[in-house]
Image (cartoon, rainbow, N blue to C red; front, side, top):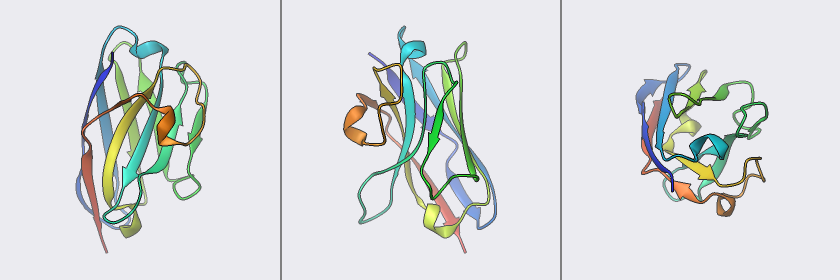
Length: 125
């Protein structure tokens, strides 16, 4: 089993940057694909980014492509989401998720087996 704890959220002005961190525990972390999702008030949870077990493959939602970067550090058991050029529409609770598959199987949240508790990101205009 993998447990994740997100951090790094906060309040930032439009155009600013934040780096979210996801600290994972569990022996099998390094073999899992990892993803970031977000959920805004009154909206469904949506895919943001994902990374394969090796870090060699990354995927992004069109809405964040070119602005966000996902990465992972195996020795530290960390996954990061670097967010630049933030917009008010990026405001949401951001969740880290783990998929027991080594490869990214798609953007659906049902593909992910473990979830963190989320961290709030608020972008002011």
